[in-house]
Image 1 (spheres, rainbow, N blue to C red):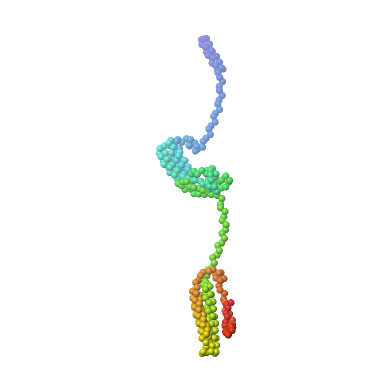
Image 2: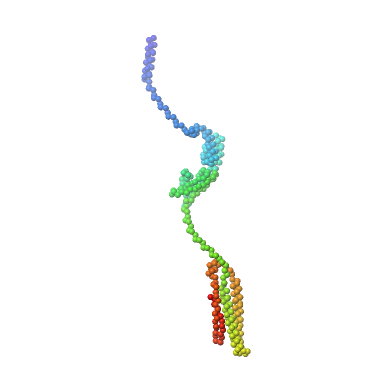
Amino acid sequence: MHGLIRLALALLVLTLGGACWADPPAPEAEPAAAPEPLPPEASAVALESPTEACARQHEAAQVERMGDHLQQARDALLACAHEQCPSVIRSDCITWLGEVRALIPTVVFEALGDDGLLTDVEVRLGDRVVLPRLDGRPVEMPVGFADFSFTRPSGERKTVRILLRQGETNRIVSVDFRTPPAPPAPEEPLPRAPEMVKVRPIPTSVWLLGASTLVALGAGASLGTVAKVKEGEAGSSCAPNCASGVVSEIKDFALAADIAFGLAIVTGVTTTIVYLGRPTVMVPRDQALATRPRARTLTLTPQVLASPGLAWLGLRGRFQ
């Protein structure tokens, strides 16, 4: 009995001693901070499977293509054409990818300067830098109207507005930075064409022939008068037995008068023919007025011609 009591006490002492020498309890750890919630879209994307992601890109590509957002449609088709996507989706995306790529318009930018083609030109579409320098390579652009700004290092800027259509490739968009040529000098007005009129100028030959006719008439009248005077003198002094020299002299004057009158007739007819047949020419009105012959007045002056043994009365004419 006593042995059982001593054993129970020994066990009690050992138990209390172990509790005293045991390590103190570790302090309680602070609770971890709760993670921040993700946006609904990111949560949905993070939770979707690869197949669901491929289907979503497949659907987005069709929507972007119908909205003429060909570059966004191309990017979606590249995603759903990946080998991890189901074969049915991949087949559609690969087929549509070729079609969309063929529809995306491309542009080649060009700038002209005084020394030829320029390269140090920046191209912007709105606020977006399309090219920092021109390199002659085609650049993909969205469909529709586009306002491209070309800026040189000096700050000179030009803007070009174009309409890009589906399937339009390598469209040249060019601006001209060349110095404009100096404006041409104003042309002098052309002289006014003179007014032309028809005239029939009198040839010089008409005046020469007319003068010859008058001279011949004068000579014929003078010679005829002399012949008549000598014939009258011979009739009163020696007729009908006048010397042969007297008769011959009278005949010579008469013949000379006839020749002079014949010459006057010939030259008079010739003068008339030449005058009536003169040609018609076109000359400026001012020239026609300047060369128009003035009206002339014929002045006749009586004149007595006298010589030893001979005298007669004649007329002297002058045009004024």
